[in-house]
Image (cartoon, rainbow, N blue to C red):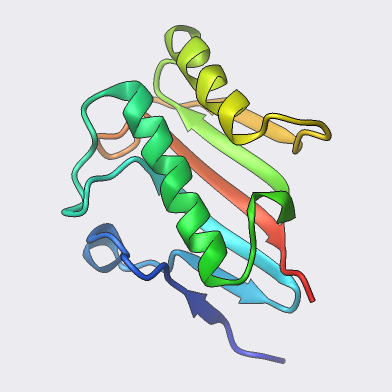
Length: 130
């Protein structure tokens, strides 16, 4: 059985060390990406919600790239939202920029009450290209 291989983006933010987790774990040809948030370099939340969502996707893309993946390699998305009803329009605007053409990835959205000061988090599973 192979060991976990931790993957980190080049400019990883402070949250990984502060909370003791890996940005992603490679297992065979799958990449399991931890929840990515719209953090500033010091790990604090971006205060503007739309920008926070954009930064979460930027952090996601950087983590995918560190494993040789792109957004096209994603097979499963789960997002977490602190106020889904009021955040939906902003999230959809960013989503349409990130995923402009079909086929769209499958996506599960979950409303939550707490995200450690953040309002949006995205985690994915991707297939690592050969």
